[in-house]
Length: 147
Image (cartoon, rainbow, N blue to C red):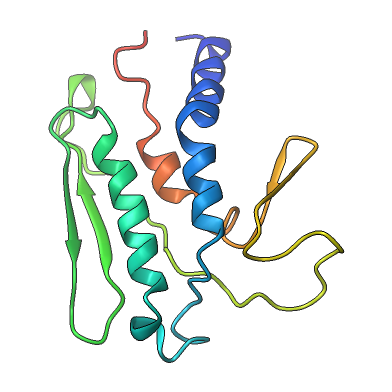
């Protein structure tokens, strides 16, 4: 597959399916438990897990299974498995991302905010948009039968 075909595919998928969900994700003030002791009671982590697992379940990936693993007092884990196909054989590839965000900090320019998504010059600004918030989207943005 040529790089230009793949790039066109990814850009189209990004615009059609991912940007809207990533924009919603930014609005969730889901701070890391190190910065939000009451993370479970606030419900932001749960909202993020539901948003991202819902998007994952909509993806037409043959054989994918998805589970939200939970342990008492720990943040939930969004786990998905996609069986290997084709020439890849039975190799295992692990991709990691996290759903929580660093605190909002100070110093945002006027008109910008950590939980308020903003597009400027083709770039999306907001907390979590570039701090692994996109990891699940990148992991499951696939070409399917594109060859």
